[in-house]
Every structure is written in structure tokens, then in C-alpha cells.
Length: 200
Ligand code: GLN
Image 1 (cartoon, protein in one colour):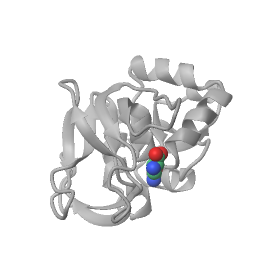
Image 2 (cartoon, protein in one colour; image 1 turned 120 degrees about the vertical axis):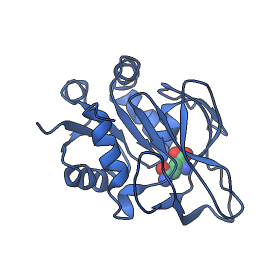
Image 3 (cartoon, helix red, strand yellow; image 1 turned 180 degrees about the vertical axis):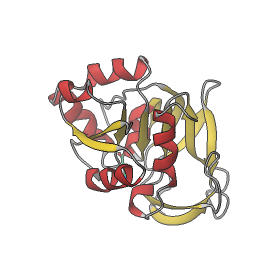
Image 4 (cartoon, protein in one colour; image 1 turned 90 degrees about the vertical axis):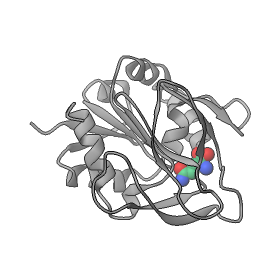
């Protein structure tokens, strides 16, 4: 059976995630309403702008239902802005910005700073076999600190940000600072689909 995986389609790179999920063997569907949320086996929170997505979640009456679904165990993969939305705590938040939470993390928005606000590098990810993942970072957050419930699966291994945490897992929740959907490497989506299938 193909799992049905939603892509939160309020803002951000929805099309790229949809294609990557389909390539990973899932049926990808856009999610904009509560009724659509109820139909999915898992959900992707795409990159974009976390403050905008936060506001739109409220405007579409999705914020509380999604928060509850996450707390109840819905598998969710958050990329970049999606990672910010999944974090229990954020640093350098916009005034009034809230997160859905669910992951025992403190995430710093726009953490890499102006000099390297967008860059690409190779990242080794636990659970992804073979070569390192070619990862694109676009005004990305990093994980400033992690609580006992969450697990680090990827860190930066070269350059000024060496050692920074950029991939995390907590039960059925997965988050990366980077955007695997735009570099053509499907292995993070494969990992998420196997989490949705409860195989990994
Ligand atoms: N800087 C953005 C934010 O705070 C995230 C950027 C991204 O998703 N590419 O939401």
C-alpha cells in the first residue's frame, strides 16, 4: 500500500516536496484544510518563511488541529522553516511567532548569518546509507540545543559552522535545516516514507 503523505500547501516549496515524495513511493497530496489533514498518514512541512506559515496556519484554522495531530503521533518531516515549526523553542523568533512544537529542540532562525546565508555542503545523515547527502541551506536555522527526547542525525562537518546540528529525529518526527527537495537527492524523502511506513 502506498502511504498518503500530505504537503502543507500554504506557502513554500510544495511542488518540489510533492515530486520527491512521489519518487519515494508515496502518494503526495496538498493539505490546506483540517479535512485534508485527517486523510493523511504523514505530513511534510516545507521550507519557506516560518513566520508566514505560522500566520497562515492560524488563518486556515489549522494551527491547533495540526499541533494536536503531531502530539498524537502523526509522522511529520519539517525542512528548514518546517524544522522551526516543529521545534518546542525558537531563538531569534519574530515578535509573536509561535511554533507547533513536538520536538525537544531549541532552534535558532537564520542562524548561519549573512556571510553564508545560503550555501551547499555534503552532510552525513544517520539512517541514510551511501555517500553524504548534498544539502542546500537557504537562510537556514540550526539546532542550538537538543533535549533528551530528540536525537541528532546530521551535523555540519566542514567550514565555520562545523559541529552545528542540522538534522534531528524524535520518534516519527524528522527535521532538517536543509532542503533535500531541491538538490535531487531523494534519500531524505525515502527515510521519511520509511518512518511513515513504521519501517525505520
Ligand atoms: N529563514 C526562514 C524562516 O525563518 C527559513 C528559510 C527556509 O525555509 N528556507 O522561516
